Image (cartoon, rainbow over all chains, first blue to last red; front, top):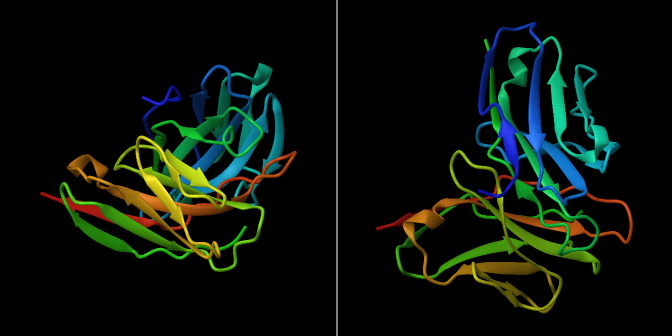
Length: 116
Length: 113
């Protein structure tokens, strides 16, 4: 257990529905990341937060995706109007912050999304 | 960030040392080498990182060549629980801001009894 928890572990939804995932990082960690991983590929960066500020978004993050981190604690990732191509493992990670050592990422176990 | 090249897969006998190579011939002076691994159905796990000196911790050793164009992750006594995908990542750590980790496909290590 890394201390990063994600909920739910699995989500099955129908195409066109909205889904929301939650991530609770390690409590003292300032940075929070979202990644997506499809079968046979490494994780792909989606976005990250420094405290409550969303500082970078990948071009993979289409307009249907939105992430928030109110109060700099937990984060949510919402996907609107899901498509079958959104089926993937969504991973959350947190880190302490600046510097090579502090930038060690601690990942949760992910949320597996299946869009039917 | 510089690109890395890793073998797609490797086998290792249980109890033997697993040596996982990584080529990063275009690495620049301010880029660190990070290793993560991902066991099936789990998120990636940090293993070790280094800049130019060799590093060792309780999980593994990282050997970086003098020209820094390649590195080797060594698991000294591999166990079945070390079966995983191992990612070698080269990354700038800026004084401010951030550069996210960029994962490739990694090396699938199978430890065989």
